[in-house]
Length: 465
Image (cartoon, rainbow, N blue to C red):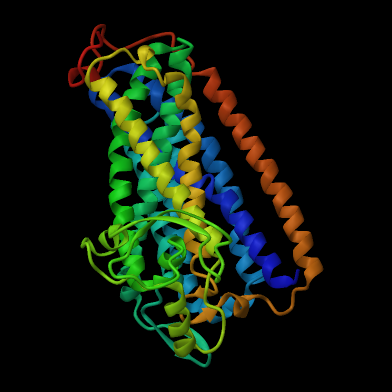
């Protein structure tokens, strides 16, 4: 293997490790803020305990996310210096704003929140965690503004072989940002919801801290049902945008070799998934056109036609991404999404009907559902990035052109080996700490301030039979 595939493997591995932490940070910061808001409004201490307990898990995850994220930006100068040189005037601006504005906002007020218990007023302390949540999600926005330029370049001019920013507002208004950002944020909300649902179900099944985890389960179920339903709708919009801007990615995700109108949806395709075509396929008529255009008719371009078009437009070369990975990652992401929707609705129905959570047949299996959003997040990222290949900046620069010319195979092998081991160690530490504190449950307070009787959510949820 030469420098290019090794550098690709290194960036993919470090990105997947880092993205393991990001969605939970986005969603759990908001959920903790909601819990503390309920505490401020109701005065019921159980919600303060919830904010502190889930906040502790948030802090562990946040710390690991920061550590793994720092290394990623160094790779642009180390392994991808030609890419950084070509697009640095554009790519660097949102990354700098993310660090100077969003990350500082997030980290400063996280310190205020951690050390401000019983030192600030309830309202001020609650405002601090909301600012942490705001900073976390604004941070994601700026990262995705940078990434969206790679997906759909806008607001630039080419000068002396480099892409130079010509319109900052066009960069902010990039249509790809406003389908990708909501999808990413809602994926984070879904991840946090199933994280809380799974841990709460674990304790409810074992009848440990039942009151505490009953309320946590309630909030996470309502929050998660809304989030995953919106996530699927936004994902549909993002797929329609992809058909217009990166049709090869959609063709690869569907293993669609020949253009079709109306286009059928691949339920499953089995074979070598190479340019020779399918060995066995089950396709549902009209569905791909319906998903692409909200109409039973509509032409969806196939891989062969797009390859010929791109050769005319960009010159000789292979413009077909890795089909098998793109195809199956798309199905893993969508399948996990709909399974989460089913589980969230299942839990919500039990809550709305007032059925005791301990009688849920799937209660003991819900902790396993924590893995579902991680599966969807990882495979969704793989489809987004691998489906764009061979481009690092779509239509402007191929991945092979972005690799550093001065690094050699030995350098990349050494850094790949070291970073994989380091990130793997951090992953083990993170999971160990999360499992340890999640199993331990909340630390009970000696003095309980909440009034006896109904709690805040019981005012609108039916009483359990």
